[in-house]
Length: 98
Image (cartoon, rainbow, N blue to C red):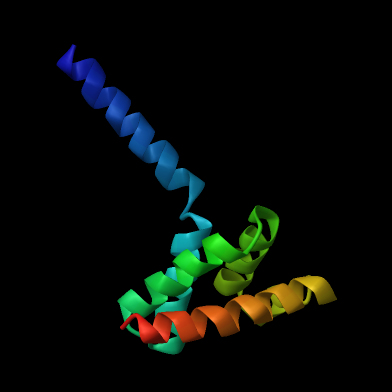
């Protein structure tokens, strides 16, 4: 029974790893990598993205954060407006929460 639990845990872990990071985690890692901000601030930014952006836009934003500027070309004008709003609100909120 213990062996079955160990194998099941290993399979679950590999499956989750194969799926890649969550959009939030992708945004946090890109924030740390690209801005040099502290991890806590970037985690706040990631939390705000989850709270403020709908799921499809959150996924597109995370992909753009991971892939770079070329991916932002796929954003509609409305997407851009929502991301700008998120960025402004989150930057103020996260800066205050230091």
